[in-house]
Length: 445
Image 1: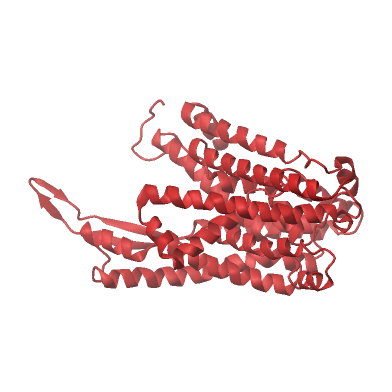
Image 2: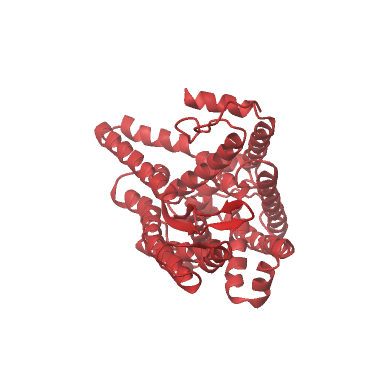
């Protein structure tokens, strides 16, 4: 009943309702585009082939774009080139003085960085589109020839089409972030993953129906899945609160300060971004290998980093831990927090203001980030072991744990929090409240 009440409250706020409808409309446009086949590709042959691998990095890539890669869709690249370009720019920001200077220039600097990111997106999308065109032209990719007339013109048209589609997807994400609700880029990734969920459930049920899997075992697996989802939610919203005391100040006849507030430090300050960043990096080798479909050496390298290999699991886990610390360092600066506290007359009980406060916050941030990063890495590689040793279908394993689950939970919670803030600002109960805020009367929107 509370869910119904929250939905009714949303309908009473025109601005929030318009934002949600706008977001849904653009996501529908993206899903429609993911069913439009690339020019020059035989759509009937693609449908008959059932298209491509499911238990490797290309299969995982296809999961993120909602099956668009398997359908040889114009949105086959999805938003991943943009994510990769963002990673490169942020990495350059850590070592390049020019990017560092732009990061400190406020709004103008951010606009310049966004411009560089878009240029990088075009370049990476063109390179990946070339790899896709080579893969589509190779009969081994789909088990049969799906391109009636391969050659230079097909490659050129495919590169232009896929690059333009990636730019359009990037534009959709930016519009959702600006005029809709939630982070547009993250929502596009999440909607692509969720589009595969019904199909995965059906595939899992067919295993039970045909006797390949015991019903009791399947129920136990689903119960464990629920527990893992609950654990991911707790890990995502978990925080360590640092008390901050503000000294009393007398200004005229008024007394300011004298209160205790808290700095909420999340166990995973970086949220879902380390997973997205690490996954984008893992797609790069598979893209490069796709340029050489007939090379035995490249195919051997591909087997070493295939989705169900130990090499993939170890490398992916290391990248997640690295990007968790890297993105946390970007998102949360202990020095800025300590300086702001000192200017406002705040201090942590038992810790001297200034350098000591900065070191205290940094030590806590480091300690809580490590278990969060390890937990992220374990959950991210869990599907690899479920597929290899647990008799779980690859599609369903992605929702049992791994990148898909972390992205869905993280993006869903962030979006719900934004909706929550809109509701609470207008004195309505949100999805994440258990009761009305005390002392708050009913105010019409």
